[in-house]
Length: 231
Image 1 (tube, rainbow, N blue to C red):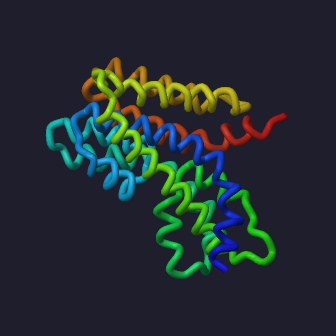
Image 2: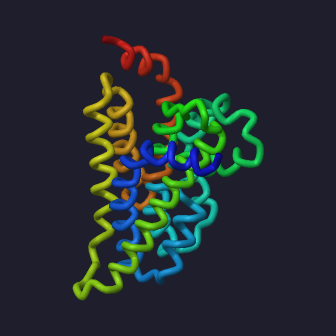
């Protein structure tokens, strides 16, 4: 039963594998360039598994100790997962002890696959969803480890590799802009970030910007949905 579920789940995760291995490797190199040892990418990739939050966590670990600000920043960055979770409540219903891990591993990409993929008739739905999540998780951990190890073997200076985080967010923004029929949500993000940067300065703008984005998107949810559904 488990083997059938694994074989059925794997093809659905191949696109995620290509992205996670590459981004995970960049993340592992980024950690190495920032002075972190081999154990950090392993522990962080296994326990956080938050994509953009993991990149940000590197700078947070290097910054002065501020647990409250870190907590709220992580909450705001990952707040979109609340909506993913609500959307998956019915699909994860009745899956017993598998459910906590499925909830933990619900990244953007895993949500995209799990929300649409259906197991074959002879495959258990719970194990099918479990292996989709486990495979995606393993790709990220593997990429992070390989990147960190490769970073230790590369003979040239890796300083400046932290720009990968800026590049990643830029690509995500451009891809979202191309896919969306409406650009209201993107404009909200740009305007809130710019206003927060001008008001609070570069050292303190992130939390107010994300709080403003979250509040405005909640208020404008219906207009954004209508614009997205329009032909």
